[in-house]
Image 1 (tube, rainbow, N blue to C red):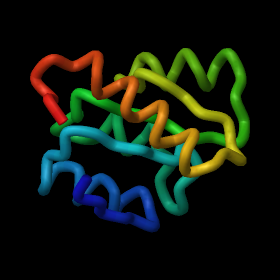
Image 2: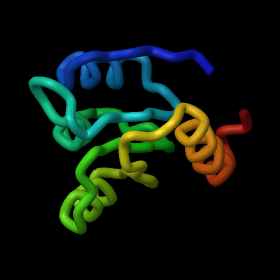
Image 3: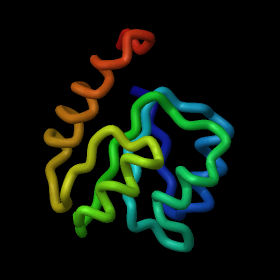
Image 4: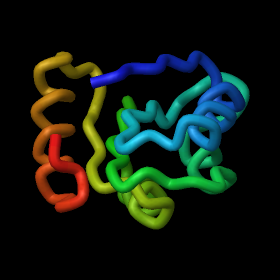
Length: 98
């Protein structure tokens, strides 16, 4: 994987529209602009979007799915857990033969 790291919502939005990644792991609680706002404002939505959050409610889950998120992981979590979920999501997208 090629990994790009952003520290704020606006930085994530700019990078998302610039590099057009195949997959995104997005924290829903980013500084300045939250992850769902990033997805709502992005011109490009990757085929795989995995969200991380420390507060998972029915409303958060509904809003995440409405913005294109395929899976949500509750924090804290391990890197292994994130990679496992990401790999499962990638397998569901035929055009991403990683």
